[in-house]
Amino acid sequence: MQKIRTFVAIATSSTIQKRATSLIERFRCSDANVNWVKPDNLHLTLKFVGDVPNTEVSHVCRAVGNAVGACGPFSVSYEGIGAFPNRERPKVIWIGVGQGSDRLVQLHAAVDNSLSELGFLPERRPYQPHLTVGRLRRPVPGPQLCELMEEYEDFSAGTVEVSELLVMASFLGRGGPTYDVMARFRL
Image 1 (cartoon, one colour):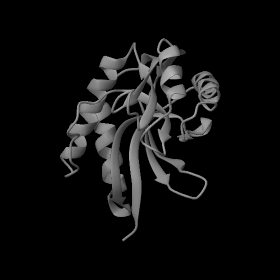
Image 2 (image 1 turned 135 degrees about the vertical axis):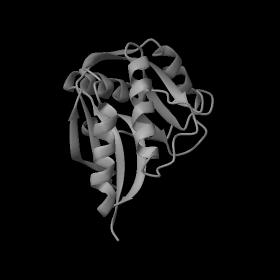
Image 3 (image 1 turned 90 degrees about the vertical axis):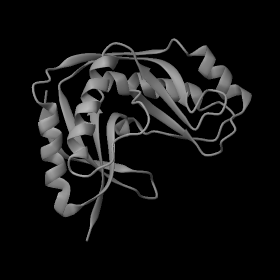
Image 4 (image 1 turned 30 degrees about the vertical axis):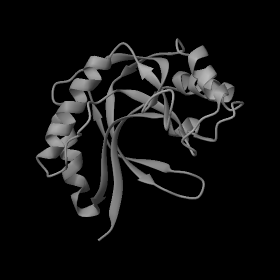
């Protein structure tokens, strides 16, 4: 049975993509070995579902649609630079969320709960909305990356209206992942 690597996401605007890409270009000069996210692949992941049998994708889409419910559009501001697990030993570099963070946490919980009814495990860690911009290939960064993260800790990529939720398919290839939209749900 074919499986589709699936996640629920919020698309970014072209303005957010341009500003995030500008930040990435500034960080490329660091001494860290980072796999930077391509501008077209920038998105906010609301829930990583995992490998879903193709026969169950429609059920996942329906569950996400049910979770959206009466949630209306809202604004999200992308601001600040951070890292998972932390800035001293980063594995993932991200732009944070200021305004709208509480709404994203609520939306994540609704999607998580709806998908758990289908047997998908809920998240164990608290959800922290963010826009991933890079993943370190080596776990120990050089001092330049840490200095850049500190220098840009107040970075702002702007504010965008969130008006839809996407169910996405991810295909891994030599040139990095490619994404296809499987379903859209208006807020």
